[in-house]
Amino acid sequence: MEDAVRRALSEERLRTFDCAVTCSTQCTPLELYLWNARISAAFLVPLHIGEVVTRNAVSDALTRIHGPRWPWVQGFEDSLPSPAGGYDPRRELRRAAARSSATATVIPTLSFVFWQKIFTHRFDARLWSRCMGQVFPGADRGMPLHGIRAGMHRDLEQIRRLRNRIAHHEPIFGRALADDYAAIERVVKLRCPRTAAWMAGHDRVRPLLRNRPV
Image 1 (cartoon, rainbow, N blue to C red):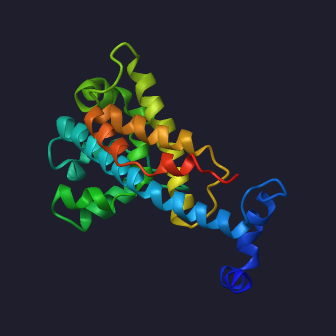
Image 2: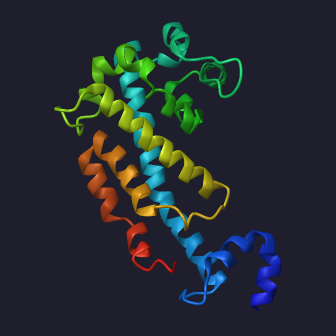
Image 3: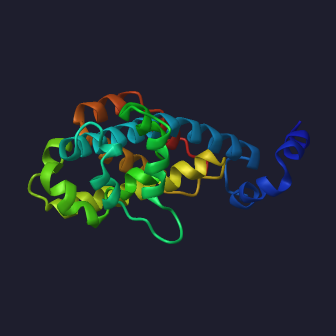
């Protein structure tokens, strides 16, 4: 059985798991592989909630400044960076807006990195100085606005990297997974502490972490 599974998954894919298992490890490479798949699946729920909450929060902020049809407001489009190389959020928004006539259908078509880019310093004066408290009521009122925004950007970068590894079925067992969950929880709590508590009440990540094999 084990040899057949290894052939199906490929020796190259299992090499990372082979290297992680030592004589003192209380699991086999395939058991570690299965645990990695289970913890990846468990993360899908908080990742889902974190992403939806984030993009809805940003849409709320943009609506307050630019109105409910913000995807088609030229002033907002012009405020987005449009570098000569690499990811271009202005181009992504333009393409998404051209394919739809409703803000609600544009929102889910924009990539995670688009929403993360709204938490760069270029939007401190344009956006966050005008509505941070209303959009993120869970934020510490004693903390500088730019600090809250920068913290969000860091957490979203951490979440994005985790999300991408899970989406490509890559190993995540070597990450600080408790910190990854905490980053998601912080983002959700800034928007709505009650939603963060609801998410925690249905969490399957931390029980699996208590039985981490390596």
